[in-house]
Amino acid sequence: MPKMTAIDAAVLVLRREGVETVFGVPGAAINPLYAALRKNGQIRHILARHVEGASHMADGFTRANPGNIGVCIGTSGPAGTDMITGLYTAAADSVPILCITGQAPRAKLYKEDFQAVDIETIAKPVTKWAVTVREPALVPMVFAQAFHVMRSGRPGPVLIDLPVDVQTAEIEFNIDTYEPLPVYKPAATRPQAQRAIEMLNAADRPLIIAGGGIINADAADLLVEFAELTGVPVIPTLMGWGTIPDDHDLMAGMVGLQTSHRYGNATFLESDFALGIGNRWANRHTGSIDVYTKGRKFVHVDIEPTQIGRVFGPDYGIVSDARAALTLFIDVAREMKAAGSLKDRSAWAASCLHRKNSMLRRSDFDQVPLKPQRVYQEMNAVLDRDTCYVTTIGLSQIAGAQFLHVYKPRNWINCGQAGPLGWTLPAALGVRAADPKRKIVALSGDYDFQFMIEELAVGAQHKLPYLHIVVNNSYLGLIRQAQRGFQMDFEVSLAFDNINARSGEGAVPGYGVDHVAVAEGLGCKAIRVKTVDEFKGAFERAFAIMEEHQVPVVLEFILERVTNISMGSEINSVNEFEDILCLDPSLSIGKSQSMDVVGAGAAR
Image (spheres, rainbow, N blue to C red):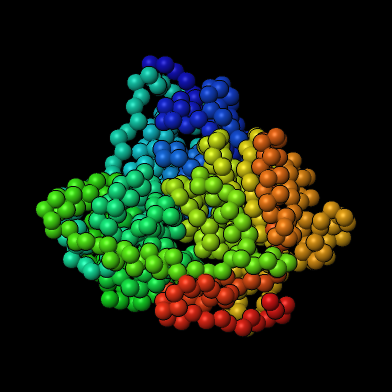
């Protein structure tokens, strides 16, 4: 049996499991792993500027392509704690990433050694599995189990903590006979599929709720086939956006309190049945359960047994991988159609499409400073169907979801549940590392952009070009809007007079941070846009710069300080703060009103 260090064996397992790229920051307690990576020479390492950034890069890397596993590496102590936010974000959205940390020697554990912390215990609530390996011979099998756990059932992250003396100990291991452990995914049964389709068929106005589990299962093609076969319109969740193209006649819009379409909410409120597949009934999608469930029945399909009934009890639940369930649903629906028992949904689908074409929000604003809606209108005009958007949280994300268009799975990459500020930039770098050819456009407000702005240097150093749209109102915009309920505008302004603003170079007085200067100082390029007339030329220059220099390009749009974006406390009472375009005045969805802006400095 070949002899080697335990950490050499771990790197061989990483390669056999398909790992080609890792993200991290070296340090004393993890240097044996770095030595093994250097010795192996087959795994690319991308050096982050912050260990949290490395975890978000791994997250974006996984989300970019089916089958990917992002890996992030850090040393002992604060490196592991810095990655907790990344692990939480991945766990919340069912994203498998592997976090590897160094640790003090086994003899020093629990003795307050330098940078020694019980990261296993800290990480357990936000991982599928967290383990400190105390026996060198266990190392390769722990890595094998990690990949099995990450890929089986509901995907999620794993943390492996490696004391430095465990890494360097010699073990016997033969990679030539190594095989990855089989992945377990529950599958629906034929009787379950028949029951679900019978319930759908009994409804008059059914909808399919398409969640992120469909994307995880790489089953968007089956979703579209099933929708077309049955004629049932589809409501994608925010995590499921792209499972059906936005311009498909059966794409009925998104539902929710914030990241939703007027026509999506209106259609859902008209429905009497919902078949949820791979979704978790998130509260930003449902609002209060009483309003969401009133007058309709539900079937819920999810890969995790404890997800069914967690938010509310459905009328019927199926534990299944989305691909397995959809395959059976299609088989059953085909047989029913052949027998002439599948209902004709054309009238219901036509009414949904009419709402989609009629209940629109305005975006054609020309004023200066710019309104954000106009920025998204121009993005739709300039960016093609293959564009992959990466974003996290804030008014930028909410308005983006209301106005942008997504046509393919994995072209809306969004941390939906945790929503940490700063995620967008490193995640976009991870997406780029996973896919050198995809057109990647990140979307941030100014605060999200500032949180991990140092990671731009990673894009410059490692030649990871992408376009970063920054909509800058010099505000914590979403929190400012939320503070309206408290009749205040308090400690949410980022504006100040920057004494270093470069006169004659487009800096905006009073808007604080000069993002163009910072981006250029980090080795990237940046363009500032202030008027509608500059849009087309700015996008053309940005893509030309990316092509020439192969670095991230920041495209900053200077917005009016205050714009309230449509949202509400219930799906039947979303407040429309701007003018709306309703091409059919007979359509309505309950309350839809404007509210006066309150608070100091908050006048429109």
